[in-house]
Image (cartoon, rainbow, N blue to C red; front, side):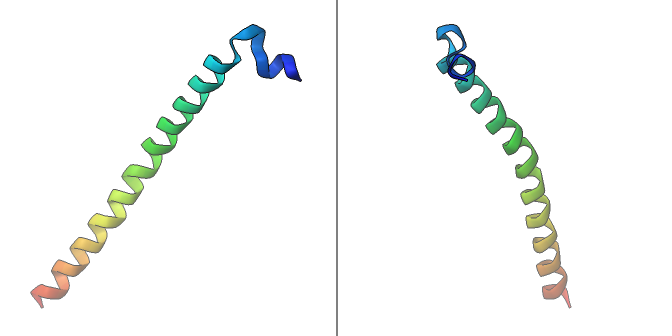
Length: 51
């Protein structure tokens, strides 16, 4: 198990790169979803104020 984490002395760089890529992927998924919800809310507010 320790060898898996250490990865021949390169574990820090490998796991850091995995963490960065994972963060980018999560951000790439969450950001448009949040923006979509925000736009829906803005459209709903505009429609209420127009009436």
